[in-house]
Image (tube, rainbow, N blue to C red; front, side, top):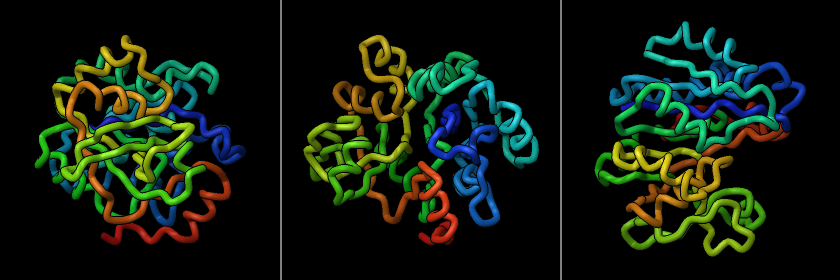
Length: 245
């Protein structure tokens, strides 16, 4: 299994911290954001390569970071040089698939969130379902749902509908940017792009995919911390206690 890390954004809302430094390598307590995620995932023993998709501006930072890791990390430069010229998350996934000839199940994760529960429970869930899977959590505030991916599921966790940044959310279930693609569905990314799925937000592909292939949604047993601006970064610095579950 491969693990793709989406890390080609410019994090403009975190300036000046990220004006010349990538958000996923900011530190929380004694680790970078990426270290919290990947060190935990690697303990599952199912990932044989991590692929960090960077923009051109920050690729050297990721290459330096990767050189110290005990597991295999490949760093890709998607060639973008500014927030205005970025490819978008879905095209970055396809860029990695094309660049490396990927042909396997894969985790696709945003490199700017941390969790207080082990990623391994999600991996176990996805392997048991044998379908593409997403995470979900209950969000009580509609305004927050409008900035995320909203989904509806049946009693067996099958995704019935998913909408990226809905104007009128139909449920309080939100999908954070952590996904498991089956090998078969990873080959459909190009088809989704050709069919007109959105390419900026990573959930746009899953929203399209759920209409043509079964997708299941794992209910998170803990919290996800989204580091979007300076205020949220300072909050996570104060409150995050590591992986508790």
